[in-house]
Image (cartoon, rainbow, N blue to C red; front, side):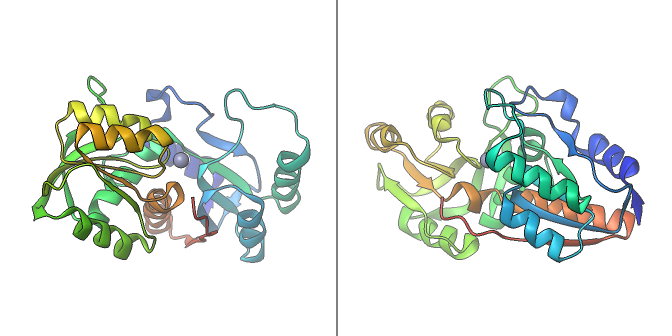
Length: 252
Ligand SMILES: [Zn+2]
């Protein structure tokens, strides 16, 4: 069992949210009970995750996509009211970490995705950003585009969209989890053979074809499952609390 304040302090030390300019508040977003014995992690703090966490007796939920995004209606009405009502009624704490969870060099979404896909990290994708969200790296050996698509499908349990803008073998890759299709320009600047992210836009397909790069949209949800799990396992070990990851399937 751990006090909420102690858990929050550890997350702040680990993820350094003050180092990021983000679109949402990072940290404790909704306060629940003081003592935490069980933590549930998930990608998004949607209604089904809260209901499942309540069912499992969670004292805290930790997610990548929380609430209070810049430009959203701040009023507690409709869907947002219902989610927060469920949390408060159940006295479940909600912790949310967005960019700090993408960027953590070992436990973050990008580091964990690299591990899963067998990519060796070489550096950051964002130039001049010490805490780059997204990375560039190298595969152990050159591989055909369709073979890499198969690896992604096997490891993430979801078939990626593969735009083969070239038939060159893939050696160096860039990646950024989630909705980072616009970072394809940074991938081109980095001179890699392939770019992997979660989502695609209409224009991404043309950029991949005309710039001659392999592009993979491997799923926003699918690419962002692994950071929260790594953090949850870390907290469970550190504080001797129980951790369970709950996947609320999402095809996007
Ligand atoms: Zn995301």
